[in-house]
Length: 64
Image 1 (cartoon, rainbow, N blue to C red):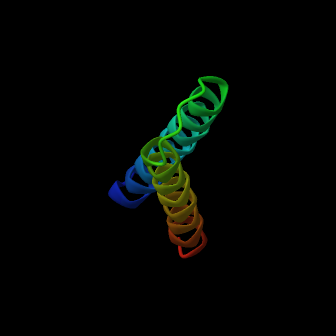
Image 2 (spheres, rainbow, N blue to C red; image 1 turned 30 degrees about the vertical axis):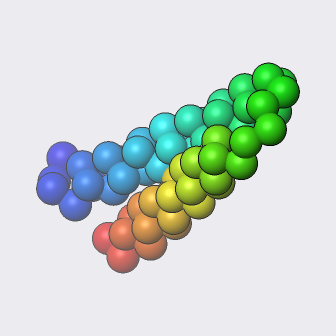
């Protein structure tokens, strides 16, 4: 396994973990009746980061 494919796999896994953490944060804060906006901002940041990492991994894989 070369360095580029390891990087693509790592970026894809980090993106998946970030997406999962964002969705779990969103679900937990919606089920608990907290009035704060900070958990939703954190969830949105994690989800957007995960989407960006997954897109980057797809672009890197396509360039192989």
